[in-house]
Amino acid sequence: QVQLVESGGGLVQPGGSLRLSCVASRAILSTFTLYTMGWYRQYPGKERELVATFTSDGNTNYADDVKGRFTISKNNSKKTIYLQMNNLRPEDTAKYFCKGTIGNKDDWGQGTQVTVSS
Image (tube, rainbow, N blue to C red; front, side, top):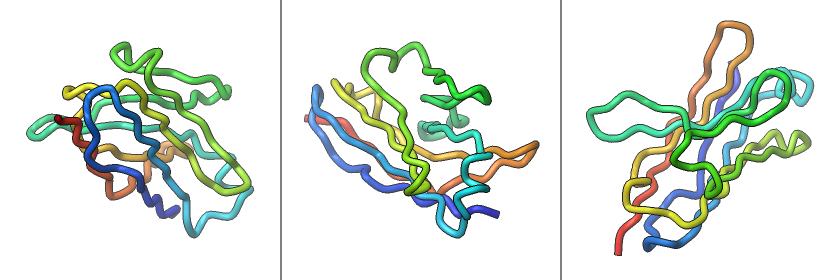
């Protein structure tokens, strides 16, 4: 089981930027590259929803409301994925989670809180 550790959340004003990171600790590089990685977020009382993911063929997929503002990227040598979030809005306030999928198994991080408020 890979352990996913998110960081980079915090409080930011509307229009600001944050970069989230997710490190796959305890994963060897060859295993990490087999994972399909992505970012999800969860509002209080709601289910987690997709924000941005890599697809199995290496492309990217974004939720409609973050397209053009958020960018997912990864550094395989660091076993890390990132979520660059620009032009943040109050409605982006949520807990953000990293997910890694291999086969039919999902691993989740503990999440990092993002709060967008003036």
